[in-house]
Structures are given as structure tokens and as C-alpha cells.
Image (cartoon, one colour):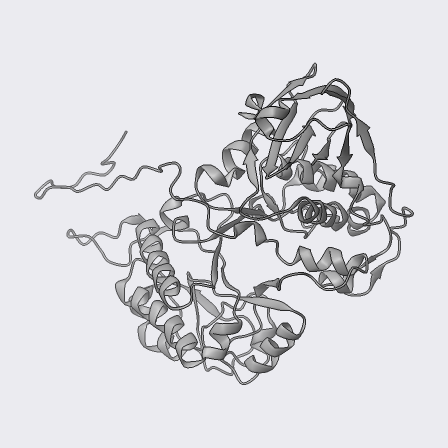
Amino acid sequence: MTLIDDPIPLDNPLAYTFGLQATPVKPMPQGWRAYDLGMNGQWRRQVGQGEPKQPTWAFWYQKWNLQNEEARKDRWQPGYPAVGPWTKEVIAGTAAENAKPFLYPVPSWVWRGAPEYHTFHGEWNPDSPPGLPPETTGAQHSGIWRTVPSYQDWHTWRWWKTLKDNPWLAEKTGGIYNDVVQAFWGPDPKPDRHGLVRTRHELLGARDIQQRMYVLFQKEWPHIVISNHQSADTHMSQLAFAHVYVTGENYAGNATLGKEESYYHIMDLDSCRAELTGEKWGIPIIFLPEIQPSGAPFARVYGPEGIKPAEHLAGLLLVHDVIPWPANTNPVPMLRLAALKENFGWDDETQFVGYWKSSELAKLETITSSVVLSIYRRPGKVMFGLMNNSDEDAKVVLTPDWARLGVAAPQELIDAYTATGIPNAPLDLKLLGGEGKIKFLKLGTPAETVRLPVTDGRLRLTVEKRNFRALVAG
């Protein structure tokens, strides 16, 4: 390890800070299995089963804050935390749709039209451009350094004041969607004692501001869910002070993903277990697919050809207990996944047993190590999630230990994926936040519910290549 890579006089002690990433950092948050990005409502509306049982999420909610009318329409505005003249109207419209908004900020950016930016931008980032009149159109923002104490003070105070002055907004807010929140490398805003500008990582500053915001919100508004979008950046020093972690955008633009329209050669079981199993950290993980933004044709992603690649991804997420974000991939498998979870029962009583330790509860016999078994348990019920991450169909013998599972040995298991009632039919994108209908997704009526016989306490079945099965007893 090289701690000094540039000649300097050692006229004072050098202090180095090290951190260890413990596991788990904290218990999973209470009620986290209700974190479904609104899929509860989407699948119910799609099959005509009425409104969701609970308010859904209006995730990535950018249109709420104070910025001029034209600039606020830009998708990359950084979310200056102050109420605009249109805020009540848009929040009321979202509430009328039985949804809770996740207000959008970018903690590492500041809107250049903000009055505070005009005064402090040179302190927050010496290389930042000057402020702009608030009526300037377009996305106008500048990066800042979260290591600067005055920025930490201002950001925390600005959010506190906005919600404190507008209790109606605090009441209706479901969460905060912190975007681009990972810490960055760059020149230290403050030269060292020798007058040299050093490269510095802002992780400690990002951690400090995250902690202050989390503690503040837990005290004042404990119902607000703090989400961090920092793809492929599992730093628990930050994420310890969030309720949910969004990842997956790191694959955007991946040439293989765009060409093959599938994650098969992008993510394997080992990488998913290392990166996506949130239980070991103590934070739920949401995965944002990137098939269509990586170059896959829109018509294929959302048409019949997109079903199997989306089922492959859904299986990977299911056996690692990951929450899917039904975007940029065919949403039908993701909606079915949401429905089968709700049908099974999805709350704090649902326990996950990953495939790396499921042999304590069930024996899996197959000729390939690419078939794995994860188990979900709740009182009187069990769901077996089988994933075949190979290019060959796999014959499987499953022998559960019914006594240890706490479930009476059944005569049959229900294939929960076929029992959702969601058809492979034209998708109404208006229900999914898009425009119009995709006319070319016409695959017929819903499949009949598949039932698999259990003989002498065991089950024989085939798991299709690059696909999964979800089987329920109880």
C-alpha cells in the first residue's frame, strides 16, 4: 500500500482515516416489503382488480419544487428544495391517484438560480460557474463539495425549512429520492498546509450530510422513506442512513446488454449475491433495468421478444430478494412478480432464505450448479424460488423438509407465476406512466394456473433455461 506518492516534507504527523464495512450494518427497516414502486397499483389496474390496498409510490418525483416554469420541465433539474406556485396543484393531483410522491433532490448539485448559490458557490466549489437569474430556462446547475460544512448546514436547513413551513407537503410526501448521491473524487476545495491542491474523495462529507438528513427526518417526519440512487456504489457509511438503495443504472449503455437484450452475460449468480443481497447490509435494494437504454430496440423490449429476457431478470431478482423497478424492460414479468408476492403475503412476517443456505430446509437435486433454490417463508406458507441460470432446460427433484418448514406436506404445489391473472396482452402504458398502448404485444389470454403434484413429499419438475419457477404450498 502506498500512502505517500508525492514528495512532501514530513514536518507534522500525517493522519489517515480507514473504514471497515461491517455486515450487517443494521436490521432491515420495518415495513420494507411494502416498498414496491407502485407496482401494487399497476398490476391491479392492469387486470381490472381495482385500486391498490395501500398508496403507491410516485418515484423520482421531479415536478414539485421551486424553479421557473420552463426549467422545471427539464428532467435533469436538481430539485431545489422550496415550494413553487404549482406545488400544491401537482401534489394534489398525485394524491388523487392514490400515490405518495418521492421528492427529488440531487445533494451533489445546486440550482444556479438559487439565491444561496449566488452567495456561497465559490465556497462550496471554487471552480463553480457564477449564478444565473432564476428565470433562466433549461437545466442549470453546478456540482458542489459535500465536505464543505457550510453546504451541509445549508442543505439540511433548506429541507427542514421547506417541510416545516409546509406541513401539508410533509404529510403527503412518501419519501425523498436522493439522486446522483454517490461520493466523488476531485480537487480538494481547500489547499493543504503546503498550499497544494490535493485530490480528495468526498465520502466522509457525503456520509455526514446523509446522517444529518436521516436523523432529522426520523425525528420530524418518520413516515418519509429516504431512498439513495447510487448505482454500484454500496458504501454503507452513507446507506446506513437511508431506508432503500437504488442500483442498476451502472449497466446503462452496456454494449452486450443492448446487443443481446438480456442480462445473461452481464450478471451471474455470484455477482448478484455479492452486489444485490441487501439483507447482509441491512438495506432493501431496488434494481433499475437498463435493457432498452443500452440500445435494445424499443419494439422488441416491450413486444413479445422482451418477455423471456425480462423473466430471466425477474428470476435473478427473486432468488436474491431484490425489488424490481419495472422500467426499461418488458414490465409484464415484473407485474406478475409483484402480484405473486402480494398473493403469497408480503410483509414483515415474510422471511427470506437465500440459496446459499436453503439446503437446511430443502434438498435440491439437479445436474447443474446453475440451478439454485431460494425460499420465502411465512406462517403456514412457503414459496420455493427456483432459478436456472444456464442455457439448458434443467430437470429438478425438490425434497422439502416439510416439518422444518412448518407446513404440512401438500398433494400439489401452485405455480404462483401462472396464477396472477395477468395476461400477455396489449399493455396500457398510460397505467405505467407512459403514453398510449403498445399494440404489438399480443400473446393471448392468461395462462391457466399450473399445479404440480407432490409424490412422497417430493416434487419433480423442469425449469426452463434462463428462467425461473415460483412454487407455493400452504
